[in-house]
Length: 197
Length: 325
Image 1 (cartoon, rainbow over the protein chains, first blue to last red):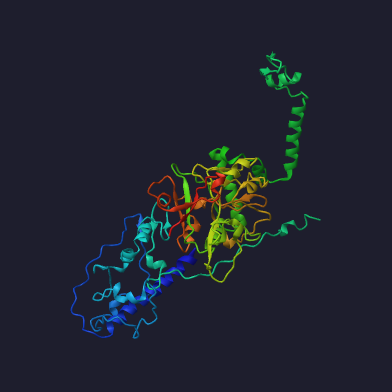
Image 2 (cartoon, rainbow over the protein chains, first blue to last red):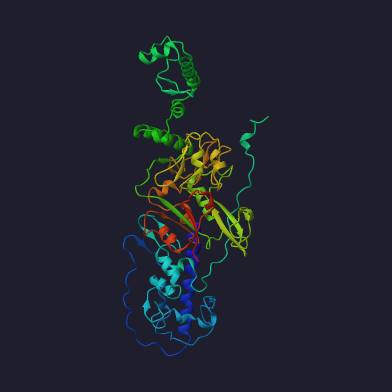
């Protein structure tokens, strides 16, 4: 039972961690120092209406909050570039490469948050809103419980997974996996020994 | 015995005389000295049974005389469950429970599988084996994943269940897991000569392993290859045994009986998802109540392209394949 859960979770964790570092490097590579910022607006809690549970985003231990490193001592660099100082392990394979980069999703000024296309700041726990901007059909199916995995009770409490629990946000396509062994072809059973002369 | 018998000639016979003089006496007063053939054979049969079972334990005698599961009184059912729990707990060295949870009202289980997302990793196959206590050797799998060529579409003449590449999915192929389709019109149930298999009110087709005689007619009748026979004594290590069982589901099976997918009856009757649904790493498997208009299954039936396997046979499966992409 744990095979599938463990895989995506761990992968997602690493990816998110990488994403944070990536964003961090972007901001830290020079540019004007960030001015004093208002505290981030309080986000509505994830839907916890009893029947619906969304687990926490798969952060790596110690990686979040991003503002540990991306604080006022690291000025924001908004120039599109290949990251080299940090987060250089992230290969962004999400949409047309020439049109995507870190700050399309990561909030430049409030590092512990993401942002929507309209600039609205969102919590990492609500990253599905960000994904749903482009993948509306998947978002609709996910809300209905048809895209992605649901666990729990078919007639009661259910647990959704966030998009990033299964999809690496920087490279969302599923990677091939090793299949479990094929069935044995039909064979005679040893129980017949002694019964057949 | 009275009967109106019409003969071809048109003459009606009002009543037939007793077959033998003592038949009437038996019906009236049950005279024991009568030597009719039927009475003799009955007595001989009972005597032989008693003699034959003389050396058996009380449990074996009870099992031999067990009534059909659906005709049991609550007390009889409880007695059988206690006997089985005791037997299994002793055999596997742990506390084994055997449930008899009945079908919930207004429930018809339905299942949907996304053919466009399944990658053929077989996680479901082994989660099912683990959950449902299938025999490891001889090997029994309730789920068989077919690898099919995209160019051919769903064509079982071009299907391979034994694929073993290093990684899946392979280019040019798609994967179609096949298990019991829980037909609304199940041919396997029709052919069973002893009614050891039947459809429950929530749609699950179940087998009573205590009643199955192992004739395998149901396997011949099933067009999906979903039924499996215990040719040998099932092997199941105590450490791998799932101790939460259901009488009609994953309790340990003896040699010589047929078994099949029950939508994890021990889980779903308690509100949980089947094991194959929970393990699927791509979320291709969906399960729910067909009678719930807001449920996942009805959403899929409304909004997705549906494929019903061997629809032309009119088995009316409650297992739907769909294309989510």
